[in-house]
Length: 81
Ligand SMILES: [Zn+2]
Image (cartoon, rainbow, N blue to C red; front, top):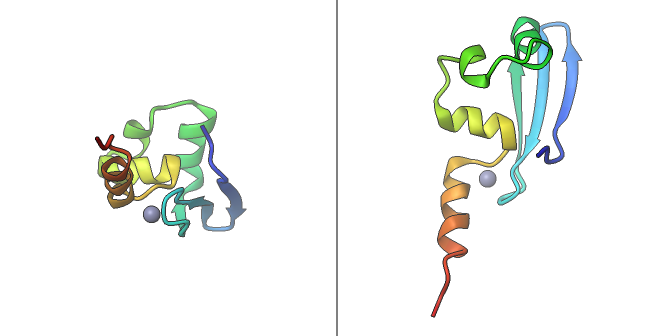
């Protein structure tokens, strides 16, 4: 599921612009061409390409949504009786 993600190739690497579905804030993630190649061309898992990132950072790159925004969304979508 891609949510309005924009990818641009730059001299220093790939810039991935994501937008949080909750707060609508945009973030730019810069990764190297090598990381892009391994991830998108070779099809490696994101954990293998970015082992030093936290799970939250990887989720943020994949879906653009901030960890704190996920929490808020889950908090507000709980059923009320
Ligand atoms: Zn957010």
